[in-house]
Image (tube, helix red, strand yellow):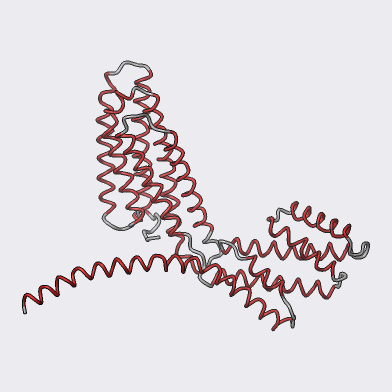
Length: 376
């Protein structure tokens, strides 16, 4: 019996991690599918709700302007949705006004259509409308012109557009509002890991740094900047995501520091590429490795605020400071020249890296009124 019980326990100990692994495999695609299904579901809800309310409120038989305005107004953030909806309403007003003005002088013809579209697009361009909002001027004007310029038709289309744009804004703001903060955190962390890999590559490379690695780092920094900017913009006029403001501030601080560090790492690579590698590489190996460890600890503290990562980062920064001081000692006996200049530039970049990471870590910690720690 004891043996059988031991076998059963052994089997269960094997099955449990297997079941967890299978659940994780199934959960990831389902999670991605649910995220991708949100925008179509919100567009469908906004379109159907706009149509129903237009029929209920205005007695419209085919209020397609309401559904179109609701669908086309939906943008990535609530603020952009409101701005685009307002432009769309102005576009409809402008298109109707131009159409009603032209109908007194010209009948519906190729000349009238061309003139209407030209005037509408030109005025909307001067007003700074987006391309899709500018096209609304021509679309609404054409519809009014095709129906003989009836004022009652124009008024109905205008009311439907206003209703649809309002529904689009409300759906975007209160039905699963967008939250790009987790994606921004992933982008910032990916930038930090790319910097760490480049530092370790510089420490161990036997060949000069390759330009494609520098370009990859620049591209990674651009992606992180776009993600952090989107996370900040998503909070504007977003009533259900106000709690994310501190998380967005943390990401802005972290990205600003890593952006400067990326520039410093490029400078280190340039010094190693242009200088005497056989002399600089041994001198810089340990400081570069320590810098990689400091960046890794910084990313961990950004990802896990309030954890024990802070102590690890402080220790890593102290180690970097020590390694950099050790690298400075041999320079005191060097004669002047290009070699000394490249070595001094390398050590200077390492020192700036340590200071940038230290300042950002201090700003991220809530001791002096900084952003309150909170996972994004």
